[in-house]
Image 1 (cartoon, rainbow, N blue to C red):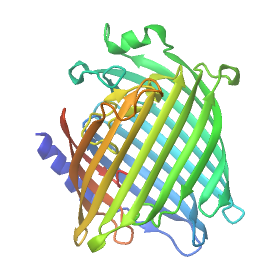
Image 2: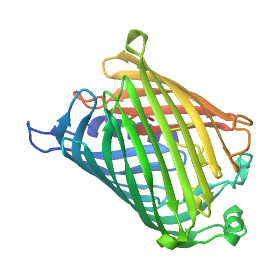
Image 3: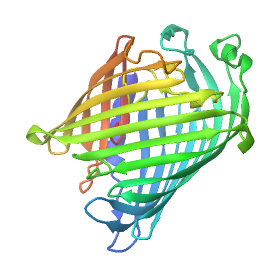
Length: 358
């Protein structure tokens, strides 16, 4: 039944998700399209997205646009999410203001804390999260921007299983409160395309501090590092690489803890399969053109979570690999619908989505 329903989702996407890009020279462009997807941790999801944009500056190192995007979707697991993202550039794109407003009511799988939890003991907890992030950065050199960011929000635990893993976790943790923090951010982006890069590097590192004296009910710090590279190879194939490091220290909300397993990284593991204070992972993907609008990928990833920084990073690593099929939805831009099948020692999962995993 799931395979039949997933095929119906695929047909719907191929038929409808060819959002027309309306833009005249020096005018505002827009893209409007429905969103339909499937993964093991969301079931079927559907909604819509709208993007307004205007190209403002381009040189040999950057290609920047003013933009505003709205995404809203609902899944059959009663997960609701609304994200609103804006970007404004000025002074020949030397200055940039970015803003993100997210509301989510998102029942999520929980298997406990650590790198050795049991898949069979998984349960569901339901948090509500409101997050408002703003950052201003300046072009320091070529494609490198640096600046400051401010995050405000609210977190509340709505539901959990009685006498379960989540209830035990929250026995000495806050179930709701305000989130308020500030930090620094560096971003480098030399990709040749936003949707399907074939060469270039994208990297981001940020550090945030959420102290009680800044109005935060949760006192913690968060360090994030993500670097991606794209290398053109033989017969128009592309080798894509990614490395990620996430670390939280202090009393962070459960949903803010780094987690392993998603539709984008270590595909095959259930979403949020492993959680702890520190997460390190990497993956490689070979992207292969086949014929017309069809393509394929082969991918492999490794990673782990751990509690302390001093633990040996490369002990007890988790691994996942698999293959995927791509179909180009738009003629002018390589926006792909993707089907991925990921395999792990715990089993397999498959995913239907739009755009690349990274």
